[in-house]
View 1 (cartoon, rainbow, N blue to C red):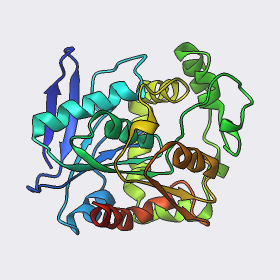
View 2 (view 1 turned 90 degrees about the vertical axis):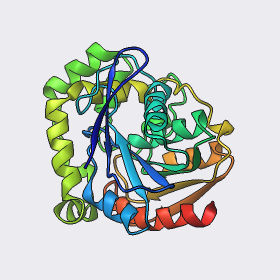
View 3 (view 1 turned 135 degrees about the vertical axis):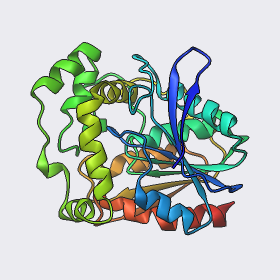
View 4 (view 1 turned 120 degrees about the vertical axis):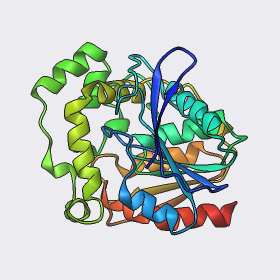
Length: 276
């Protein structure tokens, strides 16, 4: 699959992956945290079955893209917008999983001329402001990384030195998905966390500061897909997103967790086609 290295206006490099088939309609995939930005087989398969092309950019600090410490969610979305212009994309659906969710919404806010719909799967909601024990963290099996990010990048780096994955973050359905159709996601996340830890640090910092866009200004149809059993990004994040987005619809899968919710991607793409 084609791999592009694009020069951004400020001199940074942005690595973009593109599955290549010519199509007027494009799925712009915003990867989770941590991920390399490389295209995942189940994403490509779902898109190709519907005649869609997939484009995915590695956020700054991941997958060969130049780091940008202090970046906001909007900053990362602006990089993707530049890539879409460079590739000649005229119409797309912005899709984001987990940490990719905010970035998909930011792209919809920044480029309404190109983005005709947005989908978040287990996406993070905007942080409401100061207060370490606020309800934003409620229900997270392991909120240590995000809490440490409130104290800046150095604190987030220190947390990573002793942090270990909490196995209770995933449900039995999540582990089944990682052993099956979404095995490529698990392998990519593990490799990316070791190879590009700075990307995840910068993601976490971006999630606990203002995104740089207003969700109330997103006019395109938006689908918020959420697992009721999600222990990484709990259900109330989806409720917050739906409340803030003018044209949002919530799809709740009560038994799905953080990874298993991704099985809804094919139906979500069908929703976009019918909504637009």
